[in-house]
Length: 212
Image (cartoon, rainbow, N blue to C red):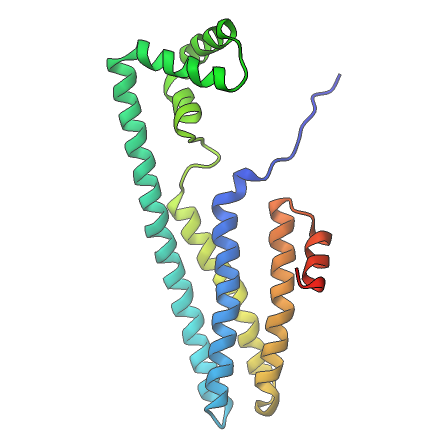
C-alpha cells in the first residue's frame, strides 16, 4: 500500500490573496493612469513618466499596506496565543474539558473525545488549542513580510506590461492598445489565480464568456 497524498491549496491563502490583489491593482491602476494622462497629452513622454511613477509608488504602497494590515493580524494571533498559554498554565483541567467539548461537536463520542483530547494535549497542548479552539495553524498564520513581498512583486508584474506597451506603441493608438492589453491580462491573471488556488480554470473562463 502506498500513502495517498492529496494536494491542498489553503496553505497558499496568505501570499496568493496578496498576489492576486497586487497584480490586478497594478494592472488596472497603471493602465488607468496611462490612458488618463494620454487623453490630456500630445506626446508619449508625460504618459510614460506618469506610468512609471504610478508603478513604483503603487508597489511601495501595496507592500506597506499589506505589511501593516497583516502585522495587525499577526499581533492579534500572538495575543490569542499568549492568552491561551496563561489559561493552560492556570486552568489545565478546564481547558481539557473545553477541548473534549469541541471534539464532541466534531462527531466523537464522549470516551473517544476524552482520550483524543488527552493524547493531543500531551503531544502539543498549545498547538492543539490554537488549532481547535481559536482556529490558528502554521499554514494559515499571518506572515507580514511574505504578504508585503508578494503584493509588491505582483503589483510590478501587473503594472509593467501596460507601461511597456505604452513605450512601444505610437502615441495615436497608445490608449487603445493599453486598454486591450489590460483586458487580456485581466483574463490571464484570473486564470493564473484560479490555477494557483486549485479552482477549475475552464469553468472560470466559461463563466467569464457568459458574463456570470
